[in-house]
Structure formats: C-alpha cells, structure tokens
Length: 237
Image (tube, helix red, strand yellow):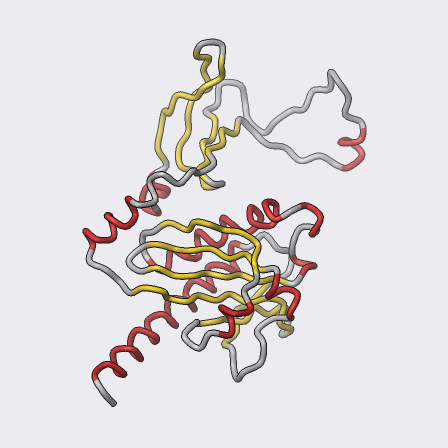
C-alpha cells in the first residue's frame, strides 16, 4: 500500500466515524414521530427509495474541511410536499445543524431540497441508512470535498461567508391550539402564550436559540435589546 493510499484510507476512516457520530445525534434531534435508528449501509443497494433521494435536503458544511451533506426521508416523515421546500428545510434544519457538530466548528449553509442520488452513489461519500423498526425510511450522507485546514485558515474561510444572510427571529412566546380552537379564531380573539409579561424574549438565529432580550420601541419600530447570550450557542458557532 502506498503512502497516498494509506493516507486516503485513514481520511475515509475518520470521515466514516464522524458520519456515524453525526447520524446518532441526527436521529435524536429529528422531529419525527418514528423512532429512527442509524444502520450501516451494506452492499450496492440504494439507501432510500428513488423519490426520497430525489427530494432530499442538501447543503454545504464549511469548517475544518468542506463537506456536501444530504438527508433524505420518506414522504410520510416530512411535512406535506405542497407546503414548499422552505417548510421541509426548516423542519430538519436544527437537527442537521446539531448533527454536523460532530465535524467541529463550522457553518451549515445553502440548505435546499434537491436531488441527492448522485451524492449517495459517490464511492467517496459515507452514507448511513435510517431505519424505522428495521425498515429503511431515510438516509444521511456526507461527501468531503476538501480536507482539514490549519486553524487560522478555517477562520479565513469562514470569513468568506460573512456576507451570507441568516434569519434572525425574536420569539415572545408559544402555545399549542386544537384545530377547533384555530377554527374559532376571529378578529379580537386573544391567544395566551406560555410566557409571563416582562419575561425575556428568545432570539433565534436560523431556528437556533442564541440569546435572550427585551423588546423595545425605536423610532416607532419594534426592536430587541440583547440582555444575555446563550453560552451553548456561542460554543456551537
């Protein structure tokens, strides 16, 4: 075995371990009713049916290396197709971001619904099948597109994403309603939230809680004054 071949095999072994770790975290965080379990992909069989692979959530993770990431799930595990790609992406975004923590600090970006069949079929990709009671209902795959860099170079590469827009949401509270209660809503209805008056609002970046703050008014517009930063979110960035 040549040095190059040995190095390549070592890199692939590290990638495989990272993907397995990420898959374990992924199935814990996915908001599905099914209790999914990751299973090793054996042989040339497709990890998931053709429809799911063709309608996967695909994105790029940039950290110590660059990776293409794909998550395919059976349609019964996803929001209705008619709800649009954004709804599907938002449904799995948090779970994917948590899962990619197995690859170290980085940014998961460019998530969209796309065809992942080519990625799943690439020999260099590491693909894990997701099972529900022993039946395959999904697949999670990662393809490394560039290798790890030195720490300073990671920061430089992350800096290239500084112009990428991210969704910041301020949430003052939540509640759950029965369908009949929703149908009864009309102008003047009052919806009680799960938070007392004066409690800090949650500040979410791409759906992830990063800070809490106080809602204020600036020049007749609502704004939020940050009062605390969530330390776990800082470590994840």
